Image (tube, rainbow, N blue to C red; front, side, top):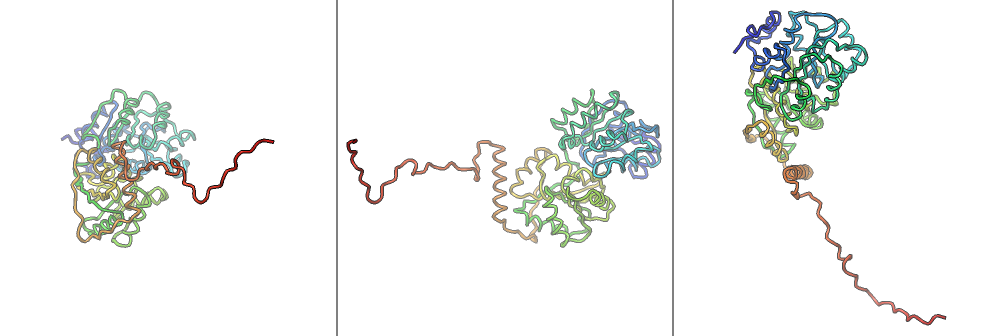
Length: 439
């Protein structure tokens, strides 16, 4: 394995890497850095937690060398405010001994505050698409000197519908530039984006698409219903020493609130909750407190699945399985980062077994089953939840077989006898008068 020195990383960046405890490049860094330095367009495929952010940042720093001018020369486009902040924090750490200037901008706060960050001049800009165009249309940002464009988390960009903004961006930045596209997964949409966005790209891939990080130990429990899930998670989290920094993913904000409510009362340690109804400052403060080790348990929807870069997350719980299967890889990628080991545990009710099978197909491996501890109280499934599960299972079977007639399909009504058989007369029939002669 090569060293950072052998990859010709700048001395100022080497010093920062040493301070951060990074002794050797990760496989994606070792492969990507020389290719990016060559000037070629690059398609990078690597699962989360493998160091792909530094894989594109380090060669960009080597290209920028030092502060110069006022307008940004490198642009990193990201899908979410959390990821924008995280990449900005990475740049801050890696350029501690360099005078390279940067800014991270995102929606949710007034654009004028971000315009003030740009005014003294920057070399590298990290931005979400919406805020980028806010600043551009307000005349607070010039893109005429962009020499390197990075699209990070390309698969999520597409999922969130950002392709029209990306096309508009390509019309206003210099044609002569280097394009770097990084994604944790590679599907048909990403492939189409690659053809449209990259010119004769070099593909750098360290694992097949949608492969979980090797240091994540995966398992699942079969759980009959929602209340038993709550009992199980409450029981497991009683072990504070083992579960000392935990992220719990739920599919909906209502489920996140329910989990938060039960573990807030029943488990030790500070807890925070994140979902779309929470204000931006609340969400950012919670992530920072979790990163600093002040918060033991973070409950969240997928809004934060790719915005949390914390090296010592011990466990990720999938309280609900995601129905976008690539998100499973991103969720469990929050643990086992920076060569640490981690554990991912899924709680699977009968209506989620279909999704579990699909996830195993995507990641090309089976996930081991664990059995419920005897101490966990099994709650009987209520009528309403049982019907919801049955309807969902019917829906899944129809997806696999459109001719399937499930338990809840609408039955055709048989013809009423009244419509085919004349009613028998009851009582005395009224005698009809014979027609008489017309007068």
